[in-house]
Amino acid sequence: MTMNTRLIGWPLLLLVTACNKPAPTEVPPRPALVTVIGEKSGIDTMALVGEVKPRYESIQSFRINGKIIERKVEIGSVVKKGQVLARLDPSDSQLNANAAQANVSAAEAETALALAELNRQRQLFEKKFISASTLDIREAQYKTATAKLAQVKAQASVSNNQAHYASLTADRDGVVTFIHAEPGQVISAGESIAKIADSQAIDVLVAVPESRLAEVKLNALVLIRLWSDRQKTYLGEIREIAPAAESSTRIFNVRITLKQADASVKFGLTVGVKLSPQDSNSSNTGYLIPSKALTEINGQSTVWLIDADNKAQPRSVTSGPFREDGVLITEGLSSGDKIAIAGVHTLVKDQAVKPVIEAAK
Image 1 (cartoon, rainbow, N blue to C red):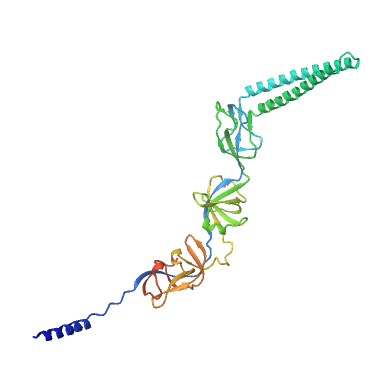
Image 2: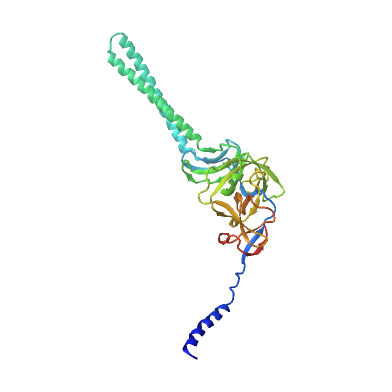
């Protein structure tokens, strides 16, 4: 074979080889987790766990130092306003009261003497036997004695009051929820001795997550059921919503007034509280989808619809409130639509997918 024949044959061989190259294979559809849109739903009834609490609970303390000699109540005791809870040894306070009264008697004697002396000096002054300055001195002495008498009388009143403070009395009707007083115990003024809870004003304390706070309204009625007796249902009214969330838990404390409480309701019991939605005909109704199915394209809330050809199509929607179990879509979807709920940020328009159906919630 000549050199020219070889040079011509090589290009022909390469051309034939190129023509026989296999066609590129088609990319298989990508699996996509999808859900089927069900019926419209609204805000579900919010169920919370709460605890029975007294609206008013006051700490009872002695106003003087002393040694406890008697305790008259126990935890759970029902007391009336003015009832004695405990008593201190009154010896020291009584001695102080006696000493103060003795000072009053002495001051009264000094005042009487000063007044008698002043009257005598006034008579001498009228007869020109003494000077005006001497009379002024006696008048000043009388005023001093009068002021001292007022002072010791005030001190005597304080001492008498302290003698009465040896008995600790309840400042309201209620039930004793805490007691820390044993005979022989020496206490300081202001030390916590007992707590009395008002049994006529009963609240339920519940914690509401910040995502559901908009559903809680003042004066709204709620249903309350004791865990200890689920056959009984009580009516409650929301009376207070905390103005700020707890820094650690990000929840808002809500207090509910328990109406017509009976003997079954005891402080510390766990209760279930159901709060009904305030407005079921507003934008709070729609199709509930997982929050991860919602994305944003060009500033517009969007979901990826899977059409009849199993291709991904972006669909602009209007979203409602977010909840713990998803987000409500108020416009843009219909019952029976299939939407992607995973990997929505990687989908492109007309991308072929292989739907993997997840049961609708």
